[in-house]
Amino acid sequence: MLVNNLLFQGLLLVAMVAANAVSNQFSCGPLAYGLSAEDCEYMAAIGMAGQGQNAIGERDAGIWIGSEGPNTFTFVNTAEVPVTVIVWYRAEGDDRSSFVGARAPKISYSLPFANDAVDISLGNEVPGGWSALYNRSTELTPYGQINNTFGEFSTGTYATIDVSRLVTMSGNPMTVKVSSGCVADMKTCAYACNSGTDSCGAAGTYNLLNCRGTNAVQSIDPSGDPTGGCQGWTDGGHVDIMLA
Ligand SMILES: *[C@@H]1O[C@H](CO)[C@@H](O)[C@H](O)[C@H]1NC(C)=O
Ligand SMILES: *[C@@H]1O[C@H](CO)[C@@H](O)[C@H](O)[C@H]1NC(C)=O
Image (cartoon, rainbow, N blue to C red):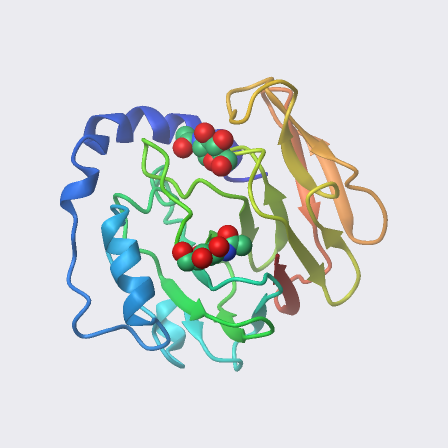
């Protein structure tokens, strides 16, 4: 949907700074609320630009920790290993928002044990995405994106959410359930590379899998590429996200 076409433009921009990625080494003192020291140190070691802002109950932040927002996402660790959830905001016109080697995320939250969960609130008309670090071993690509499965969203009037496998087709599974009905997972309302490549994003290189049924929408963008995802949460709603 919204973010896919931006991935490759961003790659070009960020290629210039990628060589500097490991020089970030930001400080883990003080720690953001909800982020463990081990996870923070791992984020610094792989070249992330910073800890999450991890605002608590602050609507002005657009994306914050808490369950009082018009939109709420509950992230659950359904893996057998520690998971660090990373959520970013896609500022208007910022093709690098998902490049966490260049941009500190909005949220970086530790879910160290199976069934640990966190509620994240989002205002309306907020676009962004998320991914996760598993077992302190997921790395960044040479361009500075998390080398794993992404979720992408836009809240508000055209609220839509999907799974994107364009950074890597071999990422960890996730399941995204919109409470009014519609699921995105690795095979449903998921953007996937056409075939034979682990990573893609240019026009004509990817498709949107099985995005049909209640609240699922699919159409074609001006380049002829698929666009769509799970709707049914216009101007507010709840989404459960299982990270496996
Ligand atoms: C997770 O990391 C620990 C410590 O490095 C390692 O012993 C364990 O095998 C890893 N688990 C999985 C499932 O990769
Ligand atoms: C991303 O991870 C996959 C699976 O571990 C690996 O095959 C691929 O080479 C990685 N890609 C990059 C760009 O690091």
